[in-house]
Image 1 (cartoon, one colour):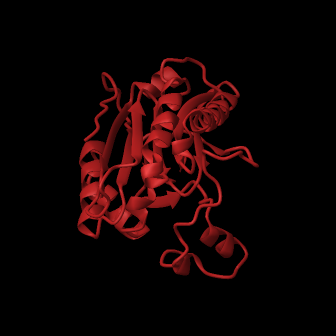
Image 2 (image 1 turned 90 degrees about the vertical axis):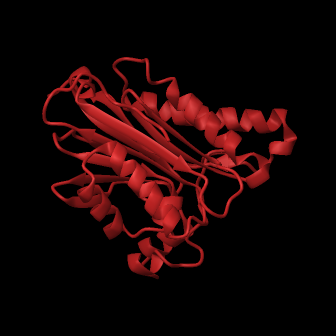
Length: 258
């Protein structure tokens, strides 16, 4: 497999989102269409965090119908989403303070071959699951991640640190850095999980691995991940997108959102 069209025909995709047990509305947004898979976690509460995440997802959706996408296309679309959020705040001052994370993966063509472009701004995450091993692809833009990087605390301590929800980068503010982007070669049998921190604040990486291992179908996995996070406390909105690259051809990607 080398072309985007060949790989796209072997994808099974599912998205799920839930308000959780504490919040009174859902500020997350998910996109699971074609080979554009995105989770955005809105911030700002009644300052319209759901507006910011909605703008981010709507902007990334514009990539779905485009062929021969490049890494620059993906990065440019994230930057465009940021500008549109800033423009929305300027036009509606009552939205001041809104913002959103954005993370996900898009099939692009790089050096003549299909590659996953994994993009991230904020503390939502993308994981890769292959051979029963779960690895985190993205790096959080958060205060606790900076403490981990500087050796002040361990990754285990970061998972329960009281400042773990404080992000250092998000859309809705002038970006001092370009979005993070990684290239990952597609591998038959692999799965990816994109998620908001409403999932990872409730479930450990080991619990995520166990659920993905027990539920090979993306629809089942997405539903169980959200259900488990809500059952564990559901203190935030929970959103996930799961994609599987099958070994055998299938007719088309199955896309769903709960």
